Length: 273
Image (cartoon, rainbow, N blue to C red):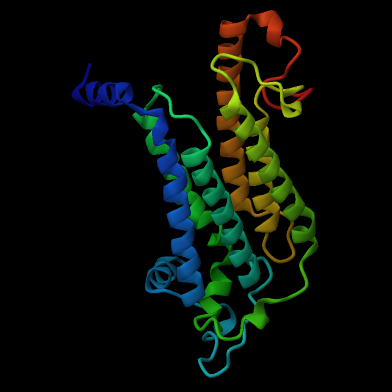
């Protein structure tokens, strides 16, 4: 085996405590708060990122909002509006805060391990999610270099159809996932879940995570569109990853309780998978 292969094999065998999942949510919460602050204040880091990206500095030759006029400059079609960017970041911040609270105060600590590569992948995912919430609003952010914090009413506009349709799924998914996590944490060790959410699937909390991320895809859609492509790619990654985890969960249930005990339940999505 080559030195590089030996190194990769060694790294692949490294493990960290499964309780380090808490780091994911703490990190995600911090990342979302950071970008929320950057967008609201048009911070230096955001400006450096926008300056480093290719393309016209500002569409149509506009030089950004005038410092003496605290009005929000609408972005071009195909770009997220400023309100959409902020709503998307706020929703992801709420998701991260809830999961952090659950991991600290609800979920039981265990002695299991996870691979270091899974840990790195998780940190990478939440780093990229920080960009995905606003990256399709780049043109709008370039136009609004002086965001009117003193005039928040400029952000109060009638919600789009996207928002009206997706926000209920976000809150419903969040509430039901919280119920599932509370129920799992309340179970006696090596007992089957009996909550109604587990009637047809062994991993409803994974399904609800997919629903929550799916709502982001619609909430964060640019003007004139129904889907945010960057968040769509994140959603696909989440669904594939959780589908894999759901299969592992089913095998664990079969091993602990027998195949017949769970043969009438789906892995994650009832009647599909």
